[in-house]
Image (cartoon, rainbow, N blue to C red; front, side):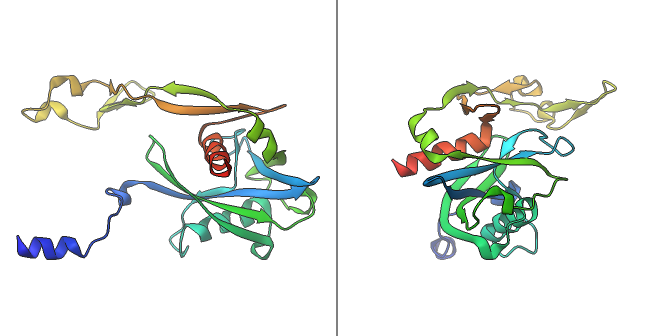
Length: 216
């Protein structure tokens, strides 16, 4: 018991299961124009995953990245064509964990450029970039919905073949109900901001919502 206390007393509080998450760094990008700050959004190319969706620059942490901030800045430079020397980091927004097991480390940064035209978009990943005033989101509450998250102990491929992911029936004491998909009563929030020609929703809308809360 003494050895256990000595061992655990040296450990600070940390996120259990950290190694199991898909880790990403995201840059909540701002641009000063027309007398106020604007969010800079990108529309993802239809040729990549989640094509056509609106998001901030960011992506998976690379093993060579020193930390999540470097991930966010590297991805911003690669996707938006903004040199890191022109990115003024304000600080961290926070950590967001999704039901899909994605951990997002979000950072706020200001692009020190005069306009979007100075950005050299990577058209293989980004279809276009556009801005929306931060004031728009301060004045407009998001639509909020709640969705059920279903846990599936098996998967079925395109040919109908089933693969067991969690063999609940093999273990005594585990209720047989867990051999079938199950849900929990807690509903995960989905935020939606209707824009003029696009819809901001999901993870990116959640980051905007948290940003606006921080300003309040």
